[in-house]
Length: 248
Image 1 (spheres, rainbow, N blue to C red):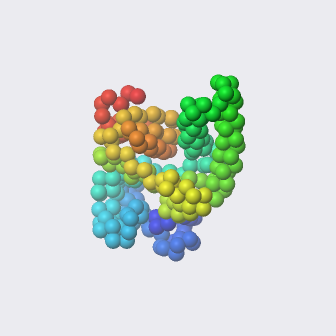
Image 2 (cartoon, one colour):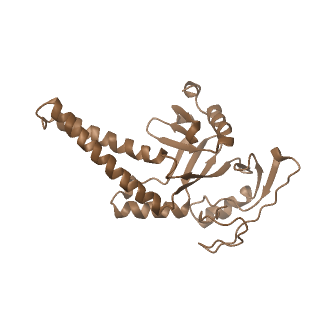
């Protein structure tokens, strides 16, 4: 169980968050029909400020349980929290690796065009050295990042007929932003990503790692869902994106 205010992991019977001190919302679930459960609880804190949260709380107080993880709230949005093991799931590491790979590739091509290398072999050797060094540094940096995050990447997802939002839990987002600023990469860090379904150009599903890649022309989002929820989330996305990218 996680605190809906700051995202801190709590014991199942906790009444107050040990991180921020906020009271933990209680849940009253109807068990007569498992497929049509209703929940009376405080909403996940997704607003940018307290005023936004207060104005949206009425629509988000009551919800219908779609599964053990996903709830459909009265505002028409599906919400769920996904917890990814950073040491057991390589998804984020490969994402970081690919970003640096293409940066180095672009730099190598540019340097080659300027005549920096005497021949193609020297160019390939330099590129190989850069990639090897980058992989080593990325691996060390990733391990440090994973340790700082407690070995977990916790995301709050919000999805409706218009699009899907991927937002790192507030506590982790603050850590990630602070870490990025220390390394002078603050402008590159994104702790939140929204994909508008009408602008999606490609969908790629990876059931083994619980990842659905929702790619637009310039925006690349990753949606995570537990195995029991994977088909539901994937089919919902497919039903709301343009026809020409459903089969990709």
